Length: 102
Image (cartoon, rainbow, N blue to C red):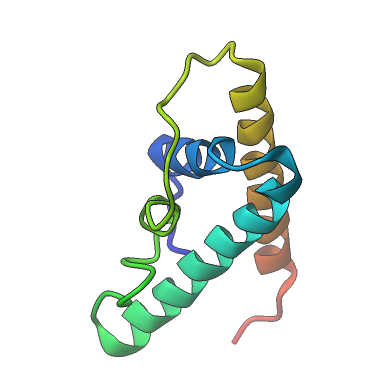
């Protein structure tokens, strides 16, 4: 995953999650984060977009999937999806911070 992570990245992932049943959201969220990480590594190594996941942004990875129309922030389901994205983002950033330097 490339950084910085922009508000549009969070929104795109949340909208992808909103388009699937609640039971599949965590799995899809992790798949999107994994795809973005794979694409970021691909871009760094080869200097070109990943053929499936794009430029390494969460936005590009999320757009591989259907996105729900963006609701207002007071939509309970969208808020739940946004929380899930932010929780996963915090986990990924925490893991990156704890990883040994290369």
